[in-house]
Image (tube, rainbow, N blue to C red):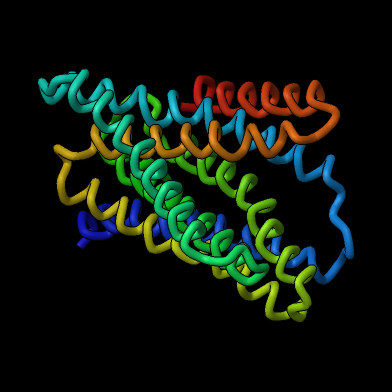
Length: 263
């Protein structure tokens, strides 16, 4: 029974962590109740910090353990790690292409633009949930960098970037005339896929150990794609680009120190 509970623990941890990221999404959506206009500098600064955290986490919490485990299992690092990394980015690339294709078939009305925004953010939350679940599931294997502390730090980093994502959904809905309550609910629901994906990621890692190196690299690739495609470009629309760049460096340094010193 104790072994069963030990096996369940990473799944419970993954569920709690992704419920946290979901709640942060809801908090971001909840800003529609507090402000008519959100300070762009604050949101862009948070995006910058989240970008730095996710870049650092992609290596120390995901890619480095993936390389170590691939070597321990006598697997081809090039095929498994590089392949997984590229596959993670490719998944989101294809998701973006499909979304744009759907947009091209529709009239660019306000409702359609908002629908595409919700779909896009929801799709991007799936690999983020998988990344968290994979990080927690990998803690059972004693890999360097694969610790509960690094997994929770990763969840916190993803939670930070979920805050402005929730706001990014709810504020346009409010602007288009939707009630604050409905805008909040739809903005929050864009993050509900993360707990589902988080539990799935942890289950896969625990049940099929051999796919762990691939899943870790896959999650890293998906996260880097999100950083390059969304977080950095969006934060750099701010006139004070130097300040936002420093926020990214601060986020990277915080995650790096937490992984290196506490990992």
